[in-house]
Image (cartoon, rainbow, N blue to C red; front, side, top):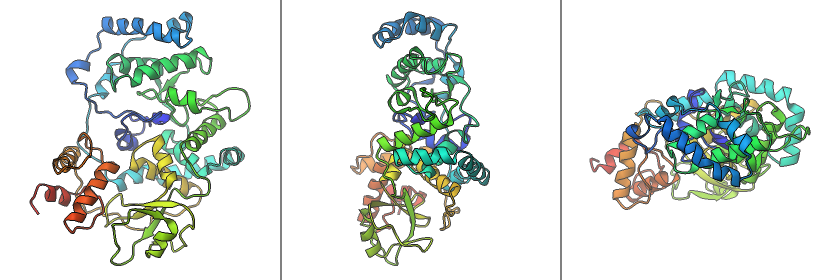
Length: 416
């Protein structure tokens, strides 16, 4: 997981937007490919400084119970990876629209393969659902999004990747801590040194756990006494379910429901109990009744012109795996399609121009200049930015959908 979740950015290009949304990847998220480290500071990690970093790591590793033999074996022949260093200061100005992202994330081929894997591991998934109270749909969604059901789990040397990132202090102390935890995993014999492979950011296994997530949430799903997220599908899927459960997943509660808004809908209501939404006139897009229990928030990933969802605490649980709204929507929708659910009903506003990364940063900076607490402008649109936009829109008599459109940027510039 980048992660638990860190999606392999290089291996699965469609996940780049999701990966870009991760400041940490909580315990699992893949780091973004942008960073505050200047190119001149990281283009080269000189061997001497890298060797000094490794040598200086030994006292901390020893304090965590790592033997000298394990430490030396882990770093034997390890050098900094220049390709990873390059990735830390690469930044794309292009931001993929949510509909294009979902076209790749929830492709017909991925849905079909997911159904094959669901049938193959039916008994395993049933046992996991009974034990952890996490529906198979979301477990399959994570598995499919992370590694296309185990078809690509990453071929990078995890120790080398983490050591490279830690040595340049990319994301502060995060990768140093992950590296030390990876050494503990080796010390405890969970995986051999040769088999400790993963993404360029150190995410490992069928569902891409970071080392810290492995230590906290990995479980033995097949009863052999091991926690093997690399080659054991039951272990990987059970570990994913355990992670989601520990982050608030509620059995029987939908992660989201696509809805239709009534005429003259009052957008001021943002979160309420599902029965209250029904009383306000919201109806499911597929014509079925809204669920009776639970709280839900209004979510319009493409603004009022696109599909509208009510998202629940389970949507937040998915975002604990990867904090990108697009990722969570992709996981949830993929899982539903694999297990027999329908496509998204409403049309996406594909004619709408998309803000590039620089324009998104400008939008955030302008919101900040109006006194909104959106954090450091980074081009990643999250809850704080959407909430600020809603307030800005509402104060000006606009539809408060929180969508970062070109029209909203122009309004913030004072041109309309």
